Image (cartoon, rainbow, N blue to C red; front, side, top):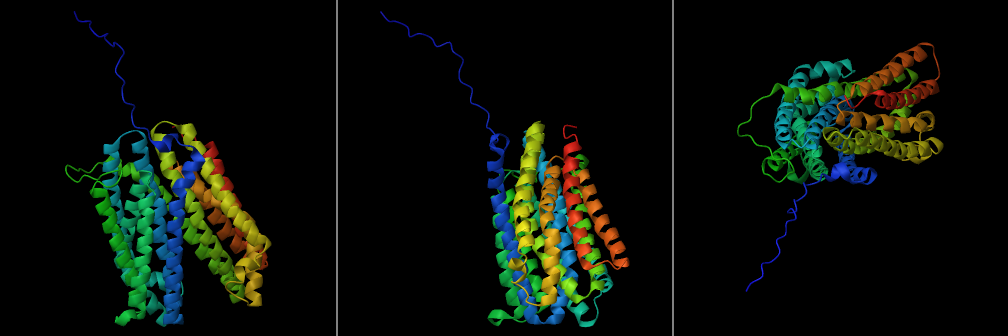
Length: 460
């Protein structure tokens, strides 16, 4: 006689759906984890700037003046592709992933690559055709203009590579992966330093190509970087795999990216215009004042990557939360990132405001330049916290696809510096009043951006 085993009538366990850690992990810890690789990559970018300046300095004074003419347009290319349109790309990708739609995310990525390629081609044509006119307008003449054109022709011939590296890196960041883009940018920086130095200065028995050779280093590095990221996304190694088979153009995909990226492109334009206008105004106050401002504002540019690191890290966190309908968490991420950037950048600003010699003594001992730079840091340094807050919240707003307010705050900063600076200069006001104006404009930018985030309804 046999006894039947009891039948288990309990329902079979259903495996839980995979959880997106970016949507559930503690906000500050996740933010810091994502921000660190970006900060390291920004260090690499800074090293490139130092190395290139060193190479070009060995080529002579005219090449140094020539690179100063090209620099604003190079920065515009980088800021638009990495921060503005790049933020739009990361925002769209992360919102799709947050909603659980991986197919849409993959399709968005291919549309993003097309936008990047077209934008790069636009920069190539524009700078090859109008570059000489732009540099002449900025004051380029004779040998200085010739050196600028040597660098510009080579650099912007490969603008599509710069745009593709930053666009594809933004696709990967949109998945929450900050490591691969950062490793790629560091590798790109190392190749640029090595190739640019070798070809520019004629090292290791190679021909000396001067400014064209230095620019060729960047062209080579970004081309290799673009090829690597394209392979990474097509090979199945990434969190999002691109599939070319069956791909069709979809207008709404372009709109999803451009509704954030296109509007965001106004921000770097505002930044470059602010610098150019204020530099032109200060030129009337003499060489020492202009040099002092340049030295102080250089610190501001070096601190921007800190805000960039926190801001870019917040984009996928905000975007995925928005895609998943977690609006409260998205806003908490934005405020946490903004506070982290404000505290970090603000602390450095306060230190140099109290002890400006810590920064200035590394570059000059000239009494006039030192005095001007010290005055700038005393007035602008305390406002760095607001600048860091504004930059970071600008990126967070990209993740929520609500970037109009931060762009308007940038417009207010431009108008204050440009209009107020012109009025002060016309009235013969002392230089310190213009430096105070820069600080006030930073405060307006930071508070204006914060106010726009506070008042904008992200749920719509």
